[in-house]
Length: 270
Image (cartoon, rainbow, N blue to C red):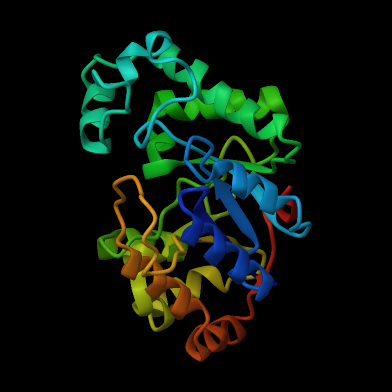
């Protein structure tokens, strides 16, 4: 039977995001959540997790939003003059042009994993904000972290994108999934890219419904109308709420049933 992990990113980003993720898990939809550990509501998210015993939990490793856990003087290449991370486009440019210290990044990412462990959380996966762990150097660091702390899985690099050319779709449909160095879902689908097109795309349906395949569907849930101060976000509150409404819709339930998808967490793919 094909399996689906519905993972909610950005747990800890805001109170509205925390509530949306909790609601979707209790509705039997979100099976996993990725925790941002350096946000104003990270402590609240960690406390909520202790009451959600069936929720698969990972750290959403972050080098592009907010401030690092470590003092800025320990990670000077990661931050601007204010001590905040450089915005994602700038940070990626620094990573690629030698202005970024991967040694400093390794120390900060280790601190983020230890933050979660210090709060008694059992981690069964790692991924990253803005998907930076797909860069070779970051991927090596993430693999080292997983092995050092006994985290058994991570996010797949095999992204099913709306922008993929037809040739790549044909290759994927003709071949078995490529395996990674650490257990991971076979495919990654980001709802932010697809929207409700996901429910009608036959290429995605053929891949994720294959016998034995595990797919991770990434959500960015939240509720609109929350007036609390927030850090700049790549997604609007309205867009986050639209994702909540989509996965709660009868059409999404019908899609799950039509493809025969069994909802699981990361602990089920070891």
